[in-house]
Image (cartoon, rainbow, N blue to C red):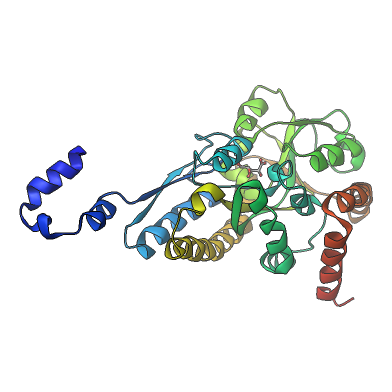
Length: 338
Ligand code: TK8
């Protein structure tokens, strides 16, 4: 008998003797969900995890509890994915880009300039195509619940403003642990090196790398403005986050418990996207105020970069499967009224 149990028995006295023991044990020991994420508590990711945790506790009447652990304290994305697969950790949120080694179809979301705006991203990710890609995880020991917005990615570095493709020459650029990113930035002329996000700040600070690419929100919340001078607006890819559950653990839950998680995840998706977009809308002005030098690319240089980057598309199409690729392009064309 545990100490809490003994104290409780003593405190409640005779009344407890009439309570069914199984029910009592459940009341005392809620399902504990270790939920890991990579960014700080004070980030769009941290705020949304907190929102999710509150929903889960509320909707389960306190029978399910989320212990949120940020700043990669449970390990970077790739390590947490393995902990989920093995059943040592229940949940996480992270980039789909780091999942490609597990489920190759996730590379669809790495396609440069796939989405023109957030509306297109929401429609595809929340629709049948997004679900199909997410369902591929199940065979690999993971259950995907929803996609959150990480956002359109932009370049920062310490060498020079990126105004044209040639400016990438000789820039040592951190990319996510993902071949599409590696290949894309090598094509542009950068010296691309894969690194987990948790090592990025210090790599920038010590000048192990010159630059990185992430949405405005992350450049702000991870304080990259302290160690990066130039921000170049490239919007080269829309990158989602995905909320994941250990399949091993998921299978031990009742249907009701699974529903609590799914409902909370769907509510968190709405919360997270609204919050992220609101923050992104003012982040650029804040980064400027923090001293970053911000530049945009001319339409002609943007187009050149786009042409170069979309050379990786053929390879992505083969990797994710031509059916999935064509279905996605078809759905986008339809949405764009073509
Ligand atoms: C956080 C990462 C991050 C991603 C990256 O764990 O690695 O650059 O954008 O959000 O998933």
